[in-house]
Length: 302
Ligand SMILES: O=C(O)CCC(=O)C(=O)O
Ligand SMILES: [Fe+2]
Image (cartoon, rainbow, N blue to C red; front, side, top):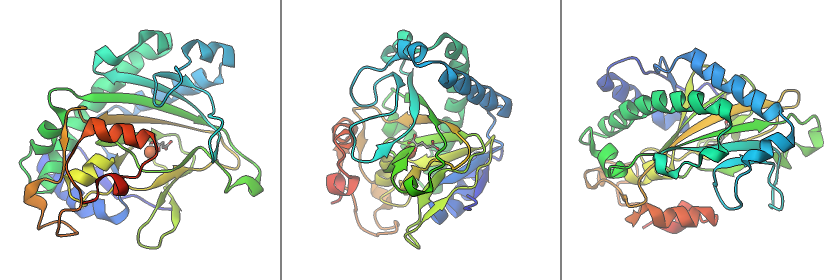
């Protein structure tokens, strides 16, 4: 199993930046430990999700999401898609508050998810500065370019069943292969090993070793573009464990719809590719196309 490089997030931002510089290239994902969000809060959030998903479908359907892509609320296992997917998920908009539909929030989630939202924003704020510093950019460059005064944050929790059938292992997924779209995702989960990353080095899928209480950082496509390919949006998927169901939570941070996305000009001769890999675009344009399944390389490669 793949042991992700762990970043001690209690260190100063400069030291965190140095750790990121060393670690991000290895597997794409990095792990944050000592991140300042109480581990007991993460555990409470996971326990709440398990209780929510264990309720009957009638109850969960009170919070049913409207049809469409990434709509707020409860989503039963999707049907009518090419790849078979088995999971339920609950998707809640944290920021800006104006996006939130309180009718889609189970009562038990209101205070707890709000608390998680506030604590995880502190992690984001330190991380986005460290990520700029690790690229030798102005420490506020990524934060200010992406945010435009409007931080978008969501909470998404997944409940995956187990699947005993060996013959279905390559047919049914919890989440099929994808890269994340936004700026970054903080993931936390119980101890069931089902998250896999595709490594560029050997072209194979590797299961990430779980470490409950830590966050996995998945860089979204937007970080790949802003860094001109230095940070990678890692291809990943979730399989179904043979014996155990799994519960995970993803806190996503996205740029403003208006944000101008493009490689930072000072990186153009420092990056892995030493040339501009991506054209400039407005985030809102990309969002629409991601929804339709268009790959970043077809959308924005220059
Ligand atoms: O459940 C997980 O560990 C990952 C979920 C995921 O890939 C996502 O939310 O984009
Ligand atoms: Fe993902």
